[in-house]
Length: 152
Image (cartoon, rainbow, N blue to C red):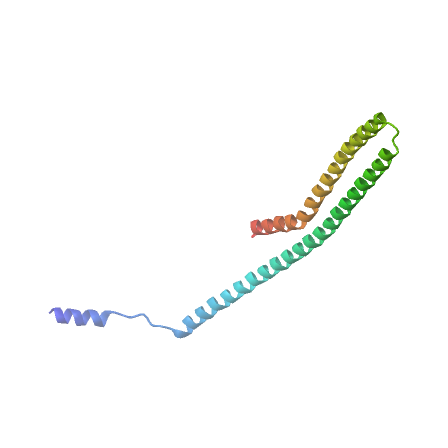
């Protein structure tokens, strides 16, 4: 009897039919969706890479300009220091007495300290501006990327 029950059960069981055209359509739709998502991701990646390249080019160009400005500022400071030193040496050579030498030396040192402080302030201002100018394109690109990520 158990054999008969088993045979009846097997005859009553229906296997779902497999429709190959529906499966093909689903696979095609899935593949098309994947391709579309890949295209979108590639487009975003390409846009991001281009924006990054532009930011880096701008940063390098700014760094080049700023470096040139700092070099010119350094050369000007060195020239001023050398001229002041030679002028002081000429004045010392023309001194008539020891008290005049001490007075010239004291005046020279005071002026050198004042000029050094002024030059340091100038260098600090140029360096601060340089750092800000160099970092601005990268900062802007980063902020845009974060904004785009938040929007997505």
